[in-house]
Length: 440
Ligand SMILES: C[S@@+](CC[C@H](N)C(=O)[O-])C[C@H]1O[C@@H](n2cnc3c(N)ncnc32)[C@H](O)[C@@H]1O
Image: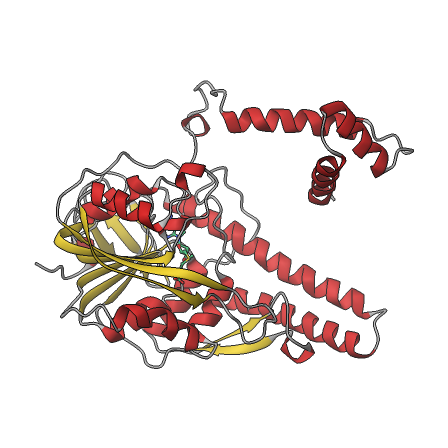
């Protein structure tokens, strides 16, 4: 059975009651526990602490806005001494940064912070408003070659009548999902993400059929002419029905069990901070029996912990262990964010895996992205290996800073550190230069 609106299949993140959230005049409210959730530009914002999550993004928006303005004034300042083509480039850049600040403010005016609010609740570690800034140009601005090349291996070889009710986790600026919708018969598509820059843009482009101006400033432009460009971001055509956008934490899925025929995770699993085997269990839970999970992304995960640097074969094994059977697999060399303005070209081996759910697995416990003692200040702080490593590093840097006397050079400090800690000259040089660069 399919659902009529997404509230039927989601649980209130506070009281975990299913089908209890309803639209009220000013936003959303839970009938069971009275928690309130806003609608942001028409998109439900359903987090455990909705206000804290919003402040996280407002802080991030304020930082990016400041960054654009700082870069604009740096460019203006440098312009003072510059001549010829350099002056031309700096003037273009100054304008582009000013334009970007204004575009950001205009797009997100409905949540733009009045002053710099602060929050102690670090909601989304490693995620900031500009985290996937360039993806929006690829999705809705650049020539479509890259998007087509990346979807082709799936649509040309994996043929099914329908994907039924589909949920895309970490949908981002949503071009992949949009193209999937165009190629397959889809009953309803739920798009989930946390980033208001990406989703505001995607919603206005896809549902409203709007065109949005955004300036790209590539890191390594091909030429002066290509050091920035204002793109008109738009979709080939609007899709008005069958698509729901939802802001919610993909780490702890708030959907009821057996909600979807298909769950897709395009470039998502590898960026999550929770162990991949646990996450696959969450995907399993929200899928119906015989439902499918479409994995799209890198062929190996680039994570900090060695055991989480999972390769494709391991991912398949882990999925089989939690009740999935592999139905389709394809790896290919594909373009990755290849901007027409940029002198750099990145390609990657990427992969599609399609699994079918053959057995239920149990949902793991709630995933906390930060230690308990940072939520409950009365708890003892354990001697965590990461903290202990930081202690050693801090001791070294404390001693380094204490040796600064107005006479010693960096060479002197490097020799002191190398002798004292038994490091090679090269190791000491690298760590000190890196350290001072982060400080100043
Ligand atoms: C690498 S991007 C992929 C975006 C898109 N799927 C694509 O292929 O272009 C990862 C996406 O996951 C989203 N994301 C990160 N953490 C998330 C979380 N906890 N819950 C939901 N989405 C999250 C990011 O905002 C971003 O849109």
